[in-house]
Length: 368
Image 1 (cartoon, one colour):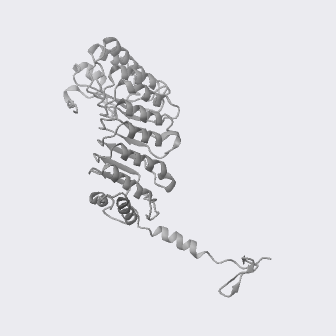
Image 2 (cartoon, rainbow, N blue to C red):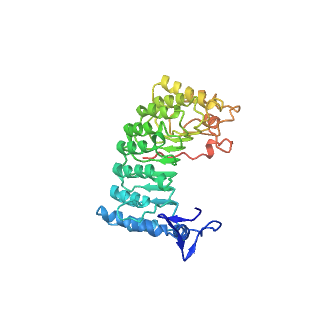
Image 3 (cartoon, helix red, strand yellow):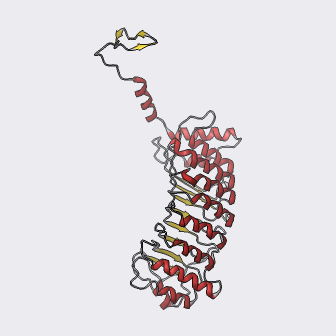
């Protein structure tokens, strides 16, 4: 009793017997393993894994992507922010995601843990590529790949891609992503926005969502409203610029914001607001004004962009009544410079809390 035993026999190491009162030596293998982990060159690993992933699906590795994965001062830890704007296609992003996870056949099983922000602009990944990104979001945290920022702009994304990302973000499937930007994907349309919102209704971590110039109309607003009224939602910024929500959409959004104490910033520029019937326009403006004038415990919206929307003068007067000097909650409110100077000055305010005179304001150009 009291001896170290292996397989029933008294243990010996280097001719010494380990009995009572003697300490076991430190485990050299454990130290060696920890040291080996520290010495991993993650840049080399992700490049090797990317090449292997490309070979496995019959693609030529993208030289520009491999260059982007090597930091200017490479210490082997990898990069935190990848911004890429060359054509990758669905296969290219699939290979990249597999390399980041490091779990493909014959790959070195070391995940690319440093990556936290991924920006893809016009890379042509399409809906199939969004499926690969969804898998990265779902599987990544288990391997310490924790994306917090995902930007997929002008990439031919449609409803199927939105469904994939929505599924990845629902019910805590991914709990690391805080910013999702899907701007300039004109194929998203109402169907895509609705699919995305199905997942976001139960997401607790996303704080910024941008869907500008995505072909969304007032038909998708009920789905967006479900997200905003969800007790799980932590969205603080919602960008819907360049869509076609019209006054009907503004009304539904405004109603959903009464009781939402998380959203602070709402971008609604260039949405055809003010082009509906006089009655609908007025009702929508009053609903927005009610949100802006509500106490913070009812609604925290304090920044709104309404530029490039045609607000009638009578409606602007009504809106101004909600934005008097006593309203200190609203920090920024932007309206189109087509309004008469006096009304513009009453409505427009910036984050600095100072009014901006119409004469000093440059009129923005509508994006095509």
